[in-house]
Image (cartoon, rainbow, N blue to C red; front, side, top):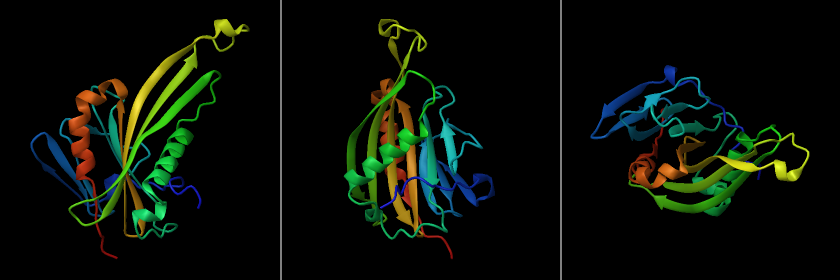
Length: 206
């Protein structure tokens, strides 16, 4: 099976038929054109041209954001999220995709990654979803051109947690992705779980 999470084709959210409804602490984003919905913190702002179907970020913590990616309707024929294999297999693909996206050509850059959890659940819409949590750390040498190894000291650039929810509908694979600094995760976890649990994929008219 090819790497099913690569090769996403993203569309612009501005052309969609979208409704936004406010709830306590959250807003609900509903995309009736592509067929998905989720809640997001009401103070987060939308960023256009970010390369995803939709993208919101915290206006104060720039490393904290949420996005949705969708596979191309012309090249994907998914029937269920189980087409990805087991949750563990899907988790490996998700992490591989992250590392591909964050690949760096800078000298002295090293990434450490680990899959923290992979689970499956049947939501209240009766559909099966996979949830994947990944940690990625990025290290860079403070002097990558130094001749002596002791002069090339690796320092931590960033340490992030990525939380993905995967669902299938309309023969397409949907991925809700949350990114947050690892140091902020414990404080933000309740809200992040609320967002994850709200993600739904919906049938659209042919």
